[in-house]
Length: 145
Image 1 (cartoon, rainbow, N blue to C red):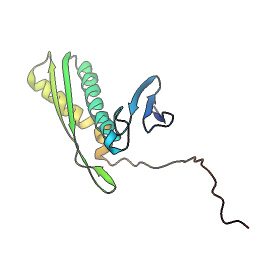
Image 2: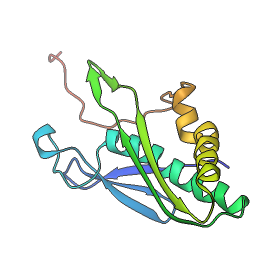
Image 3: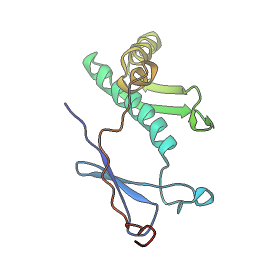
Image 4: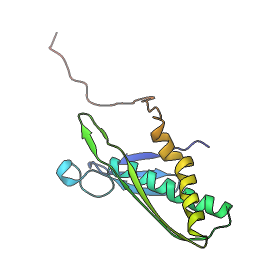
């Protein structure tokens, strides 16, 4: 399954609407970093992808094992440093409550940690490349002939 997402900036603003099919969210930078502070920044979205993936996979794997989860909480932490900035180590904490013995819930968490797609993509260093760029602007006239 190919996944495609898109951002489209709001007219005259740095904020953008991010979409994946019918789902949307606001992408922006904090006001003190040149944005309007209206939504998630890229780093937050990266870490949210880790949290969302782990949460979704916990529910999927629990259902396959016949475990009913009542609560899942995933907290992801990291930072960006350097020039250009790159993410530091990403860590996450999980809290799971369900109708299974504690040792089975711990095994579930360990299994998901081993198979979760987004964390494994980051761990494996998935390549990211610019495929195409379309630009339009104003032509600047050179010295007169």
